[in-house]
Image 1 (tube, helix red, strand yellow):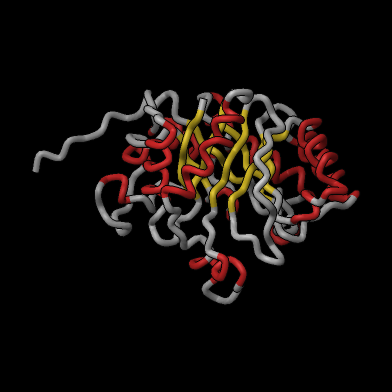
Image 2: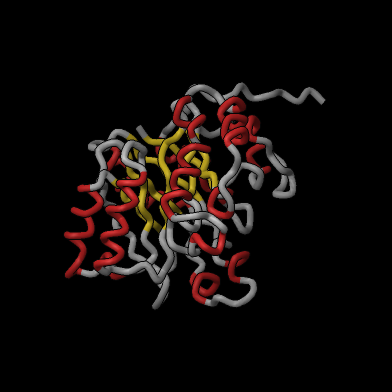
Length: 281
């Protein structure tokens, strides 16, 4: 099975034939695509009632990729947040997201580690600890430090992900001297592999000035670039239960159009979506 989704649901008015300023609701978004990446938990863990609301607003087969909180991925120290421990943050995340688990709508928890999270004994032990904190939940790992993919470590990196049942997040991003990892289309979990497409805006990705966050994903994939990804997606789909492709090139409103193009290239038709509303006027 191949699924396609976008990062957040509000920023994709073009799905409705509108411009980027048209803010979508979650029920509207779920008329078009079967999953979404939920980024807000990275900044602060939403209340359980919010997760329950999102579960209720979406069709039965709709699913969420939920981005782990910044404490969980070592972007921030737990003491800065007032939490008593790292384990307490994991427990709060687990407890609050339980409505998605109960509804069968948690596709995976996305652990996007920072660029300074490279290969080290400490970080390998931390990956083991994360699995101990969340032993029964689906987890996906996105590295942003290229040491994990260096020839000397690559085989052990993949074995590590397999050992702890982590889904490998396959990234497509600009290849800058620092802060980038290579495109490496290999699955490490029989249930799920994730392609996360950030765009190929080299200058926006490399120049981390005050406009970096708004510029780094400012990129529209050409159809030929998406077509080049199709063989790898299809190859992995033959041996993996699900391949989920997430478009994160949101800055210019390009993600939705690219997602629909890839859907067409793959010959996909998604079922179980919310019925599309017909505007008679």
